[in-house]
Structures are given as C-alpha cells and as structure tokens.
Image (cartoon, rainbow, N blue to C red):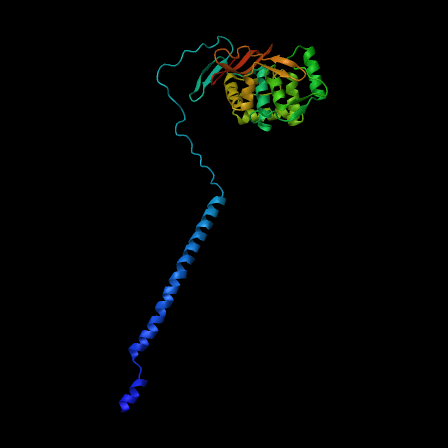
Length: 302
C-alpha cells in the first residue's frame, strides 16, 4: 500500500524530458519563419548599397599605351613626285609620314602663311564648336588705322568701320579668306591685349608644336622676319587643319562680311585636283608661298 500511495508522486524522467524537449522545437519553427524574410531584406539592402557605390564612384582614368608601330613601310618603289625646280618644298602623307623634301632647309620669309599660326592661336584660346559664331569683337581704332595704312600701301586688307563688330568666326574668315592684315591686328589685340603679346604666344606655340626652324615677328606676315621652312609649315598646317573651324574656313571660296561685303579666297587652286586649303602668301621678300591640303595631305612650297 505504501508503494501504491507513493507511486503518483514519483516523476517519470522520460516524461520530464519529453515536455522540455518539445518547447525548443516549437521555438525553432517560429524562428525559421521570421529569419528567412529578414535575411532576404538584408540581402536586398546590401545589393542596393553595392549598386549605389558603383553608380557614384568616379570613372577610372584611361590608360594610354604607346603604339607599337611607329612607322609604316609600303612595298614598291618610292613615288615620283613633281617637285618644284626652285625654292623648297616638303610633302607628308597622313598615316605614312614624310614623302621627302627638296630645296633649301634654311628658314625663309613666309608672308601671309603667318596667318595660319595667328588663327591657330586664337582657336586654341577661344575654341569654336560646330556651327558656333563665337563672341562679338568690336572693331578698334588700331584696326581702323591698320586698314587705312594697308589700303594706302596696297596690302591685303578687309574694309572695316567704326562701331562695327565681327563675330569670332567672321573675323577668322576675314583673316584667312581675303587675308586681311588689319583683321590679324583685330584678333591679336582681342586675344592678348596687344600684337606684341600675341606674337610671343605665336612663338611659344611654335615651340610646343616642334617647329624648331620657325620664328614669328608679326601677326600678319608683312614683316619679313616671320620665317619658317617647308617641313615646319607641313606640321603647322596639320595642326591647324585639326581644328574643325579652321578647316571649314580654309575650304571656303568666298565669304560675305557685314561692312566689307563679298570677298574671295586668294587661293585660286582651291577646289582643283582635290585641294581643300590651306593658305597662300605672296610678297617681294617671300615670293609665292603655298600651304596646300589636297585630300588629306599638306603640301607647302615656295
């Protein structure tokens, strides 16, 4: 009887273990139900952070590697070129290099081909996009004086008037197409404040382009101290024709300016045999100078 009365108070260890082992099983089930959405939310947040960092990080700088090929050898005989019998000349073909030169390699006066550098420096300082006219440039008293002096001495000038303004593109057209010496003065003073300061820019630019045999004494080429060689002028022509505004003007046969009216290009070879520019220059000191660009070539000769 003692055993029967005492048996209800005894605990079966297996029952105890069973009750306690069932509670964690229910807790784990509930944890799994909320743990999966939390993990997905964290993953989405992490992806959003990574995407944001990729979107806002700076673009890596490009790495430029030098070209392996520095020259091109074309099979066959060297071309027979119709070199001039007087003066000097040089020819370069894009993608191939120099095709040779003849005559003296000493610097000589280049007359109005000087204006190629004048235009190039202006466009370096005041670039023009496609179709852009650029800022208005008022005609100054110095420009009018240069026009009157040039007109009296039969220089190539473009008619200007007090109170007139030319856009940058119009001034460059007046410089290159009818070869206006007075327009060279206008552009130089507008760009650098004086022709002296602008000439210093021209010579600095010549040095940066590797024109070791070139020196400028003025902005128009009227001064015979503005000198160069055929080979240097080829390099200058290539640099200038790399400016879209310059190459566009160099290919024009005529232009109409506000006061001067209709003016024609002094390059009478323009449009013949594929010639697309670039500039001519003629005076007593220089003789006849031609910086030409047939197709994609640049040929100066004197």
